[in-house]
Length: 181
Image (cartoon, rainbow, N blue to C red; front, side):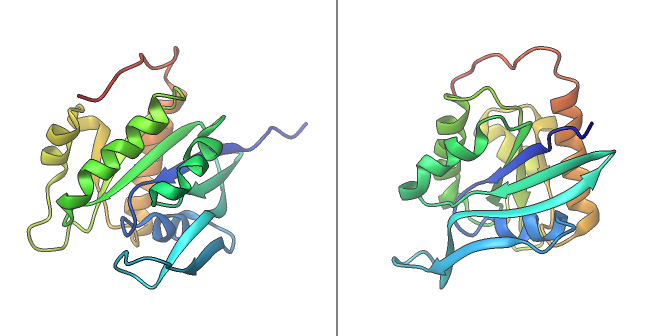
């Protein structure tokens, strides 16, 4: 009997690296729903439904879903996180102006669904990028729940995925409800 695929969701603000991380992790060609940006978001194309990739990990098929980053697509955040094993919330470390939006995305999702999550801090190679420990303080999270990564680096992407799976698979009870301050 074939087990149902596991679902992992990658979310965050526009430009945080969601599509890139799905492309880095996926072992199959990624299905991307990109369209020309209809507003000034700092890039020409944006995800409008989701990105989808797959990988085979430890005898399990894992479906990777990257969410859109704009508020107008917030309904997709909840739809995609339903039944998810875990959530990776990406923030660009060199864009602290996006942290409040990232926090709002996290609050939106976790207030509706008890999904284990990690925060991935991308663009660590950029000048003045916030360190993961500082982002953890901003989000009021334990340092182990926040990690830096280069979304184009397969080893770093797999390490973050392994960290999330460890958190998800060893959670014997649902995570306590918490409200971000």
